[in-house]
Length: 175
Image (tube, rainbow, N blue to C red):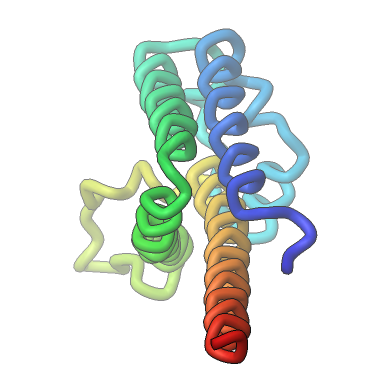
C-alpha cells in the first residue's frame, strides 16, 4: 500500500484548487511571482503574463473555475467507496490526458518552439495566450500530482483484489 492514500491526495489537490481560487481573487501576483513559476518559466523559455499582476475579470473567472473544480472534487470524494473508486479510476486518466496535452501544447507551440509558426507562415493562433509560464507550471504540477494519484489508485485496486482473492480462498478452504 502507498504511504498516502489516493483519497488524501485528491483531497489535497482539491484544497489546493480552492486555495488557488482565493489567491486569484485577492492577489494573483502572488501566483505569478512564485519561485516555481519563475523557475519553470525561465527554464522552458516561456513568458510570464502581466495579466496576473493585479486582480481582473479574467483572474476572477479563473478563480471561480478553480473553486468549482475543487468543491466538485471534494463532493465526489464523499461518494460511497465503490462509486468513488470507479469515478476516480475513470477521472484520473482523463485528467492526465488533458493535462499532458495542455502542457505539451504550451511548450511545443511557444514562440520559437518545435511546432510554432515561423517566417511567412507566422500567424497568431487562438491558443497563443496559453503559451506562458503560469499555464505550463500549473499543467506540469497537476500532471505530476494526477499521475501520482493514478498510480496510487492502481496500487489500491490491486491490493483490494488481492484481499478479495485471499478471502475467497479462505472461505473455500473452510468448506
